[in-house]
Image (cartoon, rainbow, N blue to C red; front, side):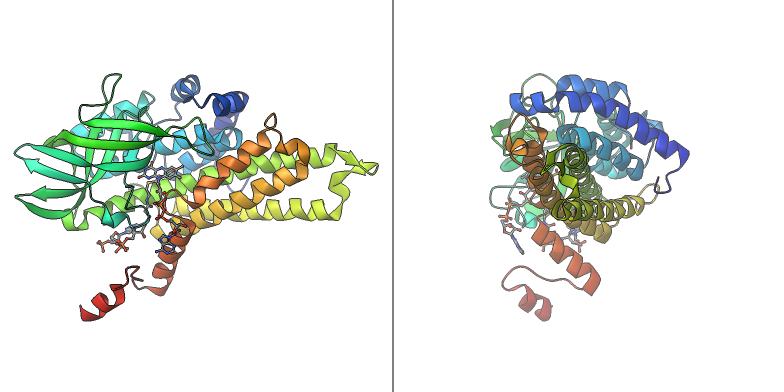
Length: 399
Ligand SMILES: CC(C)(COP(=O)(O)OP(=O)(O)OC[C@H]1O[C@@H](n2cnc3c(N)ncnc32)[C@H](O)[C@@H]1OP(=O)(O)O)[C@@H](O)C(=O)NCCC(=O)NCCSC(=O)CCS(=O)O
Ligand SMILES: Cc1cc2nc3c(=O)[nH]c(=O)nc-3n(C[C@H](O)[C@H](O)[C@H](O)COP(=O)(O)OP(=O)(O)OC[C@H]3O[C@@H](n4cnc5c(N)ncnc54)[C@H](O)[C@@H]3O)c2cc1C
């Protein structure tokens, strides 16, 4: 289908098979709000975590596109499992594999290949969309850095071992720019100087979201991630890597919409009213048609974005933002339509449809909101910066 190579189709089919096990536990994970460790072990054994880790670091060295095929299958069944596959293949892992030292790459590879889902710490209570306004500081003291700051909505806070923290680097009393700092949680508790407090969330309840506070958190200089171009370009280069995770998030949105659609299609043909299958009513038949068009269009953008990554590169920024906006908005629409097809039965918590609706809601917020990403798309197609601060255009004109 869709021009997959034999190897890609095999990978997708293998993911689809294991994802059936994720489907079987998805409702229990949602109810218990517990991270699905048994499923993580199963995904690790099956080789779905660390897919993008290069062969020299012990991984299979597969592409972002391969990872996307796997993420979609898991997300159809259980979006929490889909998100685990995103963070264990993209985001922090991608940044470390591209910019890290050999020692950092080994640490990251060993962790994800053994089942860790890393955490990426960007957002702060006062710096969400305006991420460049972050206040977390890492101050250099000889061979160590000391981090102080507050992060929020950190996916995996409290369960992740590998952390990639975005912070302002201060050297010799001078602020140099935003860089990445790698912190590993070894034991059962958090590392000294780091605390996580869970945030109760609407959907994807098996995935902990947390406020993370850092007070005097020590990071050796060997664990500083230094992208090329120096501190001043640090944030931009880290965001280059983050475009991979945007494609991953778009894929989870796509997958869960496709999962909800499959349930709706089956129900529309089974459920009878007025003596005939409800699929025969044009109102529903066209709704199903629109859902299928939405899903195929999103998949086309997601695949294009994933394929835009070169062998050692990241997905293209514009393609990633376009795919994420489309898939996030589409998932909200399609999951709601799917619930509508199910009628009252879809509204019951004994049925997966309401879970799909809740799970879909985050993607227009996390990873860059639908509004902020539209601005990013506009900047790329117009070929100019669209400053968001009140004095931004004045400052740009003065410069
Ligand atoms: C980028 C923004 C934070 C806007 O802030 P600014 O207007 O202050 O920043 P810019 O001047 O636009 O950008 C600074 C710098 O970064 C480069 N950049 C920005 N975005 C990208 C990108 N996507 N790819 C590559 N490079 C990028 C930009 O060119 C500048 O580089 P130079 O300094 O010129 O070299 C804001 O637009 C934004 O993106 N906000 C969203 C923040 C976000 O996405 N947070 C995600 C947190 S993690 C998460 O949510 C996980 C959820 S999940 O995956 O499930
Ligand atoms: C489930 C979930 C998981 C997350 N995981 C992580 C994670 O692992 N790591 C991490 O660092 N962060 C994570 N986040 C945080 C996420 O990246 C932020 O929520 C997001 O960047 C938006 O920031 P905010 O919530 O502070 O909203 P705000 O920035 O306060 O935005 C509020 C509203 O204003 C709009 N708005 C703001 N600025 C503009 C503008 N310039 N133009 C137009 N509209 C604008 C937004 O679109 C939004 O509708 C997660 C969030 C969620 C919900």
